[in-house]
Length: 515
Image (tube, rainbow, N blue to C red; front, side, top):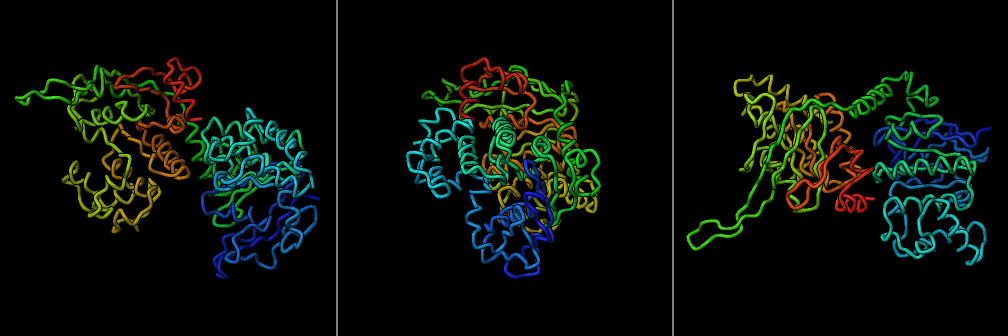
């Protein structure tokens, strides 16, 4: 007998014919980890929420022929379902900051579930809460018990959620995108923690994610969802080595491209030698500048083909000024050379700015915005060919031709940034300067844009200069890193060298602040 059996689960919204979950059947055995993978909107989360009756009601309706059984006990419309929530079945939500009560301490929130399900005294619950925080790897657990959620880091908050999920010794934990908002280092720690809990406590886990890399690390079995349906399921090895469904093959192919992306390439495509940018800050009576500030001070760097050079530093460090100099948008001294000096620089090097809303002309349609670069660099190209290039560029960044006649304000932040990337790609550059391209986006959209950039980089063999103050983002995308402070590069090396063995105290501070 399976620990959890889902048969013919179908969920509709607002009694419509639109089935967000369509005839889903799944089995989870004791101590087994089932990975459910699929893109946003595939129905993963609604499937998980329906197990414990947490789907949004009354909008979401579970069809009458659906069945969800836990150890042969039907959960749908079960009057005692509350006993299973947090008792026999624990739930780890995607964003702990919105799941934890901001008005209560960590001790209060974990103790509450212990008292409710186990009738413990406050003293006993406090002792057990301390033990759970230690089990889940919270440092200084005794002090952290009195903290509020906003006083913890993202990784710490997720550990608290895991502590709450295992508090009542459940037999099954549902983890819904538990690592999405975390940087890669913390993701690894959470995966190891969940694996450890499975081994020590004998817990079965349903691990929901859009990230194939994480699912491959943790899952015994995988179910692939698309448009509310299970399109394929099997062992982890079967899915990755011999996928049968076309959508699964596409996911695996994209995943393999990202793995391939991480391989090093030492071919140099551009060099910066002694680059300086000075801004006047003081003039004399006759208007002659007498004092300058060195915004970029004697920078020397190499840019490798198909690789990402991350430039990181706090506000005012000179990152953006350096990026503008590389694009020749501002005057500079020194030399910036490329392999083929005959190539028109503005075509060879393109830039994607931080805020797409201010960098896209609000009075122009998306078609006009993207076509602008073609008109400048390919003035004799036929209209039919231009239109084909524009549609292909939109498809490449995950948008469709339906966007062409719309204006920037009609799109979300993530969509606008995709449009900005399409505009930069349309002239076939070899170097793309990305100036804080994800800082104005929420973490979920950040992840999508980074995955898109990695895929495009591999397909086009593009070189990126990725400018950011966020070490988590820099670590996720960079091959090499240069750390800037006060206009100078104070440290540079491979991504691994910078994160595992930083030499400068300033670099160490940046890394500590990102954890």
